[in-house]
Image (cartoon, rainbow, N blue to C red; front, side, top):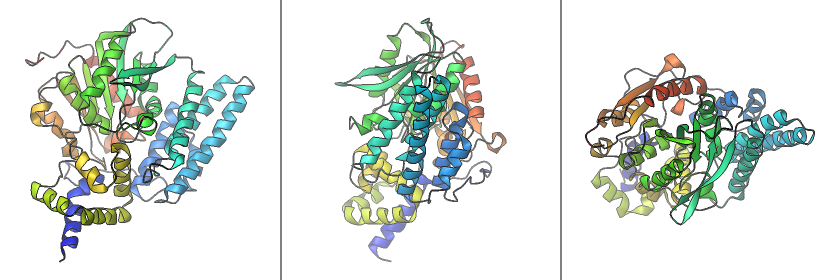
Length: 437
């Protein structure tokens, strides 16, 4: 077998865990049947859109009609379907607003914002594609229009960060400014701050929480407009956010929690190793290693780096054959500011906690592990829980809850019910008596 074929098959085996779970699980997961697309990546992203219907981010018939116009694997058709739907719904919302129908306007604008968010998802192979910035800006603009029509206060904030600021939102359950429990929430590898309203904030506000949403480097508008890319030292991002939160009189410093979604589950854990002012931590899911525990050996790295042209050729060959892997690498290059698949691999490999770091986390911690997560195997999600020594809880989502997809997409009601029931109790407990606090 030739060197290049050997390299190709080696890479296929090494990187399989980066796009699909391969490790054995306690029980074989029973995943929900595909909604429209047989392809797992497109099915998951559609489930993500549909799941926000509960919090006002979709209407089922219009979303399903858009999905049926999409060809799986064709990012242009995905963009056209969601962008066209978002445009139509936004126009309807603005017409309602012009006639004084504020509730109808708010509902339509929220759906439009969510559809715009989805539109550019498969376009990131070309960071210069103008549709990426256009759809994101429209998503932000329509969300902020809708926010101005909400009965709960939504404040656009700019959080000081190094020599610039990070964008975010501070949301309160009512117009009072009294100090109360507060949740800081962040997205992960591909989400936006606006999306977090539909995924988490909607549910937190109903339970009496303040919510501080922020985007960090590599995320949302920070990567699209500010051109700041992911960085492994995420405590350098979260510490200024915690500083900002604690500067606000509405935040009860004794009841401050941090939640991370998807890759955010890793990022908040990394931050919590160094940031000890948090009463509670939620990792959804738990992530010890963004490569899922499947990473090249030193010898394999040496071989790949010795012929980067051949390595990139092999990686691009796999990308051509695997929609999910193609998206992973393209979005990784987009959010990490690199030009080749190998460079992305090298950057991605840096996002890994050691057992010693996990033992330094002091917050009362919730680690979530899904039995049908197609990004990370169950054991890879559970590993950080095993290594923690702080007060901790492992929350598993299985077929019994119909919540097996990554981050429980499509099961927002049960996901938020279980997470916030835990968080309500966790914030009432005394600080962890860990010796390293």
